[in-house]
Length: 195
Length: 195
DNA sequence: ATTGCTTTGTGATAAATGTCAAATGAATTC
DNA sequence: GAATTCATTTGACATTTATCACAAAGCAAT
Image 1 (cartoon, rainbow over the protein chains, first blue to last red):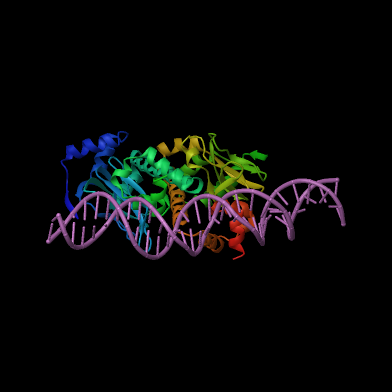
Image 2 (tube, rainbow over the protein chains, first blue to last red):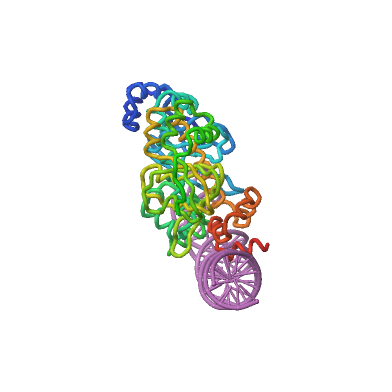
């Protein structure tokens, strides 16, 4: 459920965006801000739903989300994101129906950005074009790392890496979701954990 | 072994690039061309080597390549590409050491592009910036599809999809490499094929 | 054709993981 | 606190796949 959607005070929003996107030129930031708005929403809210077209990508100010594909009864998670991360789906960015669902893991605060409008800005504003590229490239590097892990590493090692690099995920996400993310059943994850 | 590296006749190169990148403005194309050159090379040549920084991405005019990670004795392929495809690694594009090796599957003809110079162009030229984005986004969509297949589909189904969508790969690539691409051993692939 | 070399196929295991079922634990509601 | 629900763990078993060993087939060079 969406609790509140309002325009933040301009100066507050500006301050936040400035700290997140320090490379954005002053005028670019002003244009960018026009298509950004504050959003507060409860656990379980779906920011993006599988099979649907959407207009927004998001910056997480507070809280966390999971991204997953629906598979028969169970869901298979593809990533998690928390505070200070920019999120969305590349299909949504391309104007296509999303393949994944993005859902809030807890009550969260976000900034949402209108993709269509911001893509328009990228047509004339180089610093915004480069900002968006950077976001996409970061996501691409992440996908490659994930493919590497799924193709090369045993499930034990994938668990180990996840546990060592981002132990905080275990506080936020259910083991069932983590198991699906690691590419095993929850029973198998349970056995891996009891080493 | 690199057989020939020469500047193509300007008009020939222009004709090729124009047909591949029809959205590029006339002046952008001229700038772009400055950092493109023709390359003919034999089977087994490594365009990009794991662990090294490189300067180029490529367009395949004729022939084919495989991309793989070296793992102990055997290699694990991550993708194949043939005629009319733009190839490279995202790490190379970012100036980082490549994680993958890209190797010619057969004698091939390519256009190579200087990444550094072309990235400079993206700083001032919007149509080139957008062209590069498009290439990266296409790659990203491909990675997502591949992750989906590895997480969701059985090896039998992955084989089936590959066989139905791109049967020509089986003419060009060894079953050993295809097996590693599908995430199974060659023995398992052999058994899948004998259904 | 013969010799090597590489690729592919087959058989017999062993290991990893999935599936199903039930038990435990933890959190929530009445 | 008892009852309900949901998440996690554990056990028994089935399935898939890897591993190892070797045989067969394809190909190139002599």
